Length: 362
Image (cartoon, rainbow, N blue to C red; front, side):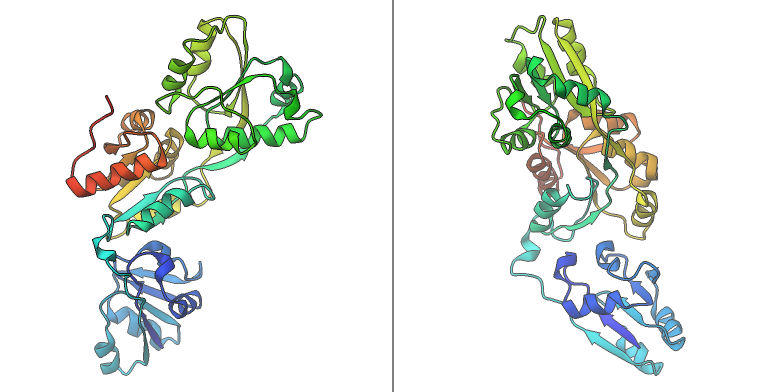
């Protein structure tokens, strides 16, 4: 039996329940090059996947008694009937009204954020019509040794400034604080946040952010702090194991005692290389790939190599990520003007609509 399943307009959430159920039981999936890999991945891991296979592959597998699924817009029903192979047509859900008018309709966009942290970006892109392919190139792990951070937390009341440069920094700092003998009542420091997402994570703890730069990167934070006397001040900076040293170096030049302590680390997820090779080695490559940090860029290159992105347009969240990408041989087609997820989406949409990169903020 061959099941001719319509894959829907591209978003894996728009495939029919019956189509997904059949895919989940498939032995073989034969699919057109334009089908979103996220739809194909509803099939079991052990299922054979044949991209661009013709009707001969369907007939051969069906005659072996395998459960065969065809994913595509063209239906080879006539050929199957002529060969005497039984088949079932499983219609797809129609595209929502005006779906084709959405700015990213038909565009295949890769999201490289960590699993569990990609929903905001992926959701925005899907709402604009994109077929999102999630290839997490970073995985967030606890620090190798929490001794230094735990000792700093035990002396939390001695710090004048507490600087957070990521949402993950806030999360892991709080986890270690909860395991300690002290709590937020010990905090006497002023709090800095690098950008609005980090600020929101701090404010979710019912804490006030005293300082945030106009530009959401290290340079912006340093500019915002320029009016404050840092001489002799103790500064706590819990962050990733690998990160830029601009903030601690510049604050130290201004006389601050900066404790830069590992709160978490990022690694390449298991299976990222195989997933990237399958996606970028396909007959039809994605149209875009998005990078939200230097770590996502470095880990992608480690997993798949910069050459995998030939013919794919890269979109960066900001200048630091752009510099990292270019240093590793990736040309960046567009860069966010505001260094946030919303800014990244706006840059991608602007490029689709005009074919040009938005001008930088003055």
